[in-house]
Image (cartoon, rainbow, N blue to C red; front, side):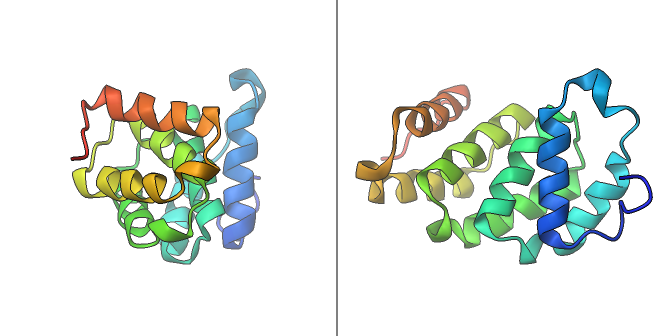
Length: 141
């Protein structure tokens, strides 16, 4: 990972961040998180919805808190909200709430997309979204 931290394509980058987040903390070693976050910032607008959901979910697991990256990912997610699956919406909600990042426009967009796909949501997707909404006392009228 060290040698390639700045050279992954968007899919490889999202996969590496997700995989690192799944590892136990001790097994991650000294993964080059700053370089990976810089790369993610550069290709944020090109992430697919699945890649974006994976990156947002991974960041709090890695204790990664690059504010420029998080704000950029929130903006990209909001603009592409209709492309997310219910699972992706749940991962977005969980990731942003785990980071302690609240954006009214983003959570409104997630809520609207979830309402449109209510019949497709499983219990885990709904629980992730509701947990995030409750954390920020978000209510969508």
